[in-house]
Amino acid sequence: MRTRSHFDLERRAPQAALTLQAGARTAAITCLAIAATWAVSAARLMQDADEAGFKAAAPVALWPAHKRRLEAAQARAADEASLEAARALLVKALPPPPPQELERDFTRLAALDAQTLDAGDLRIRLTDLPPPPAGDCRRLDGVSEPCSVRATTRLDLNVRWKTVNCRYHMEGPGLAAGTCRVGGVSLASRLEQSSPARTAMAQ
Image (cartoon, rainbow, N blue to C red; front, side):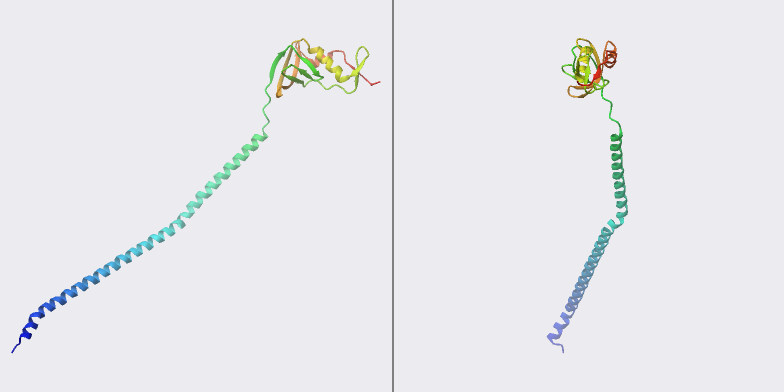
C-alpha cells in the first residue's frame, strides 16, 4: 500500500530530472564559453606575437637599403666637397684681372719728384721713367746739384703749362701709375732727347 510520501516522491522525480538536465546544459554552455574565450585570447596572443616579431624584423630587413642610401648620400657630399675645393683652387690659380686703364688730358701738372706728377686731385707715378742716379749732377752752366733735384726740375719744365695726355690705372685713392705724352711724344723720350745731365763727384 502506497503512502502519501511515495506519491510525493513519484511526483517530484520528473522535476528533479528536469533540474539536473538544466544544470548539465548550463555547465556545458559555461565550459564552451570558457573554451571560446581561451581560444580568442590565444589567437590574440599569437597575433600580437607575430606583429611584434614583424616589427622587430622590419628594421633588420630594411637596413641594407637604408645603408645603401646613406652611403650614396655620403658619396654625393664627398663629391660636392671635392668639387668645391677644386673650384677654390682654380680661382686662386687664375691670374687677377688686369686693372682698368684710364686716359685723361691734364693742363695743370707739376713734378713732385723725378718720377711723379701732381694733378691736384691725382698723383701719377710714371712707370717708364728710371730713378735718377745717386750723387750730384752738373748743369750746363757748370753748377752741381743733387741728381734727384735736377731730374725733378727737368720733368717739371716738360709738363708745366702744357697739355699732357696720360694713360694710367688706379693703385689706390688718389694714386695712379702709367705713362704720359706731350704732343704725341712720351715724357721718357723727351727727357732722353734733351741735354743729358752729367754726373760729377761732389767736391
